[in-house]
Image 1 (cartoon, rainbow, N blue to C red):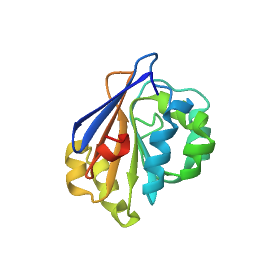
Image 2 (tube, rainbow, N blue to C red; image 1 turned 60 degrees about the horizontal axis):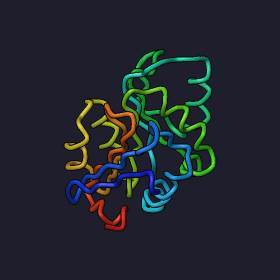
Image 3 (cartoon, helix red, strand yellow; image 1 turned 90 degrees about the vertical axis):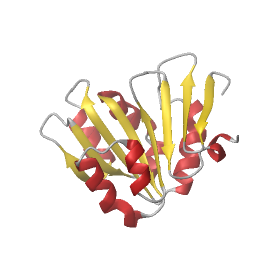
Image 4 (cartoon, rainbow, N blue to C red; image 1 turned 135 degrees about the vertical axis):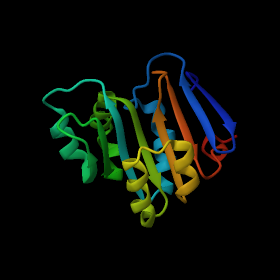
Length: 166
């Protein structure tokens, strides 16, 4: 974890910068965040926006990882939202990491209560920003990559300080 620069920006957002490489979520240094967030969530979702590239494996990867697909815009998967099997974050993280790399803006959305799923799908369909999403969905934490390829961002309606031990 010495290669990670962890910052809490306010009580509800933070960032983790990889000081050595671009983000590769399959690396073991990310176990702490996935284990912590998965342990608190009842359901986990993958949301991908703006596909970077496409190959023959993307459809197979989506089929293998998804429990239920809610949004899949066209054959190019420009916008994708599906429920992810929580075990895949632990045991199939290489496959999850490959899917992550396909998108310019990938994210994992952790819901503490599956009853909020309808609100999540609706907000993703209307492409609501994460700042608004955390205000309208209870018990949500979003882990995402934005423009910087070496930074993971986290937003939540709960304190993120606890996630980093700060």
